[in-house]
Image (cartoon, rainbow, N blue to C red; front, top):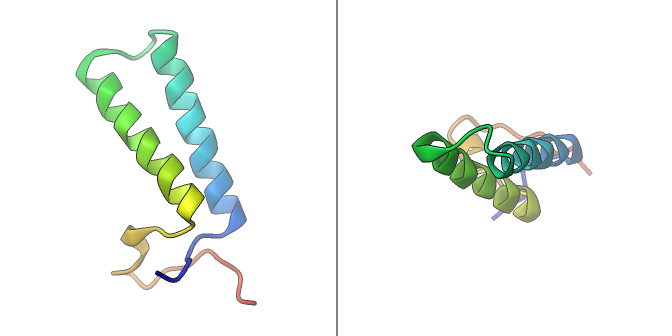
Amino acid sequence: MKKNMGAADKIVRLVIAAIIAVLYLTEVISGTLGIGLLIAAGVFVLVSLIGFCPLYLPFKLSTKKNE
C-alpha cells in the first residue's frame, strides 16, 4: 500500500471527523444520520492515520508531495 495522502489532506479529514464527533456528542445530529456520520468520521480518522485513501486509486490521485 503506497501512501497517497499529504499532510493537508490528513489534517482536513481529522478536523471534519472531530466536528462530526462534537456535533454528535452535543446532540445536534442524532439518529440514523448521526450514526452514519460517526461511521464516516471513523473512516476519516483511520484513513488519515494510515495515509492511504482507497478512493484515490481509480482516479490515480495523490495529494502527497513527491520526495
